[in-house]
Length: 469
Image (cartoon, rainbow, N blue to C red; front, side):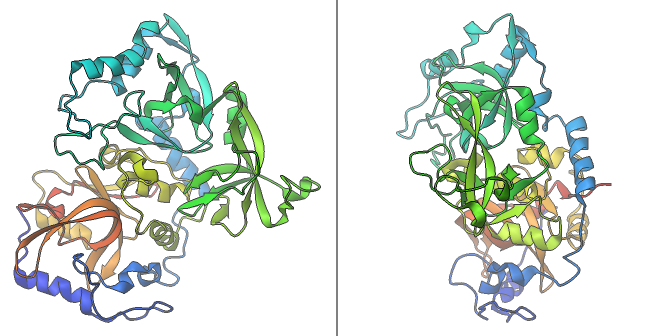
């Protein structure tokens, strides 16, 4: 069954955009809709305070002890979330080859370079040669590392950008995801050109530029990861202070959710990098020395930057606060363009509370962690709308290839925030309209279409609430 929105229904939805806001303080609002093609949105919707409700949204959803148990269940039961430090110390040749083939396989669909050149067998042979299968040993010793800067995880060990037949050059089909400073990896193999490493992070297996990883012992990496005192980046991006002649710790970008050990500035007994540290957070940064091995250096992050000592309390108010810090950031498939995609957006928001998740939307949506309302082909629209009428802030709605986060109701209609590329709906004249969002956006849920004949509601297959049972 399809939702068929009549012109009168869309007129009612659009009225949302011209209704004066009430009960919201310190927001410069207008009773007029935005002068844009985004249906049902006015200026008030673009402020986090519009969606907050006093008291009810400030209560703790899960305390840190419960979150640790939640994460441990994921590590124990979910194949898409693993502790990279738990990988076997020695891998067989068969295992390594299987891991390489798992990520670096020739796609069944056609791929093109930006100039329109079709990738032929000769192109893929070059990429396959660089994955270095011929030099996999009978037994291979696993190495361990920490990421020292934000970098890309790729399908093949190459920076070449390729696209599908639609030739949307925003969507590089060799781009898998991102990795961030302080994240641990198991190092499985090295490319033939010695410029790339095949690594397993906590939620992905792919190739990363060698320069982004410092190789160290499992013990020192474990101590780093388990530090009791730490900061969590709660802004969309923050930067370490500038340090002359030290690029390893100077102006390093730290994205939301990055966690670094905290050092007590009072214990330093003087200046650090020519600066008094009393007005900064002092953190222990992993750095890569000239030989590629792991070292640590103290870095400063100004206290004016958006940082939390320890994880943020997991509350509905904080979910809204964190989500809105990305509002307007451009869409970045697989963390491309120094940005993020729909699951990257969701994952980074929840990381600030200490909650980990699988990387891809299918892995998240099909996995049954949390509280799930699952739908199948026999589910009716009425069943889905009934579930939508009972949503709570932060609930995640999954459609094939996409996830949206519930914000709240306005005039009884559900609104979501999501990192999304395209946009389509039927306008007030019941004409089908296609546009572009290409960024983190607030939208009403009900009008959204995937195509002329298929709505978001049609394709919702799971609603997930991040809770312990």
